[in-house]
Image (cartoon, rainbow, N blue to C red):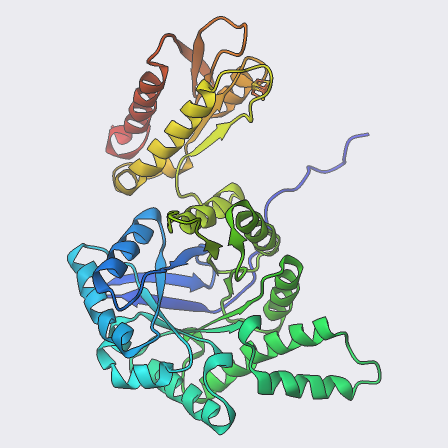
Length: 421
Ligand code: SF4
């Protein structure tokens, strides 16, 4: 028996939060308050190497990172930040920079005012601000710098560096319970409490409530989901999502995707960062691509045309369709920095590259452009479908080049100025 109502789809309503603006000159990036979920990344260069860091930031921004964080861990790093900003400005890269501070942030922000000014946001880890009486003073100094330079902050709690005094207090409170909570629940409570209490303290120190973003990073998928659900329930600050130390390769991608997808589907999360460990010699921009792909495949944002490709099976023993799918995906991504200005809307285009006649024509018809390559034993012809109609058949050794030309023609005729006439 069929259902009496249509099957619903899509994420839950977005959690209502304040909106934080991160500014770099006239360029503004909004976080929370209904703004699209923003993708950010972090450099892994030595910040004191201003040129090397500026080049990596440019690459991350070109890949689509809307904000880039860099560590400010030493006087040399703090001194380099204004030079990095100038270099980026010279290259026409207006991506806002976030300074990541641990242990000595209060000193660096006071001693290097040009660094404090050049950054668009400060990340403060309340577990790494100092110990004992110094902790409160040093935390206050960082918040005072944020007020003085009119910068937003992310209060970023991490379970690897949880404020030990606060954890001890939560454990004491737990010991008083008639039935004490399990250790895991105590840890969750400490993470959430640390983020919220530090945000409240920042507001008491004079920082506006719409200058605060929170995060509570852990490295376990179920831990992250549990902590963010609670954080989302207990405050209305925008939330930065990320699985810390996600790991390398497919493990890092799968773990991040699993954790973030559940939360994003529930309307939780205003900005994301995918903490992938790059393969030796790997490209740092991978974390940006993964972040974008999570949002785009969930239907939350559109960044770049998507290639739908079949996985292949025994019906196609050649690698032609794999090569073509890879070539087209790379081509589309490489074009986006130019296309997004010239052909607005192109980021929503779908291209299908299929391996044989079983699902090839059907899937190709659902895409804007699709090609069904010949499987084993099939006639050596590749029908091309445009907007659901079979338009031509490609043959021979130049199928890849000809198909790329068809894609470009489609983009030029369907998006941007040409499309309007
Ligand atoms: S489209 Fe053809 S080659 Fe691709 S997975 Fe399906 S049956 Fe296999």
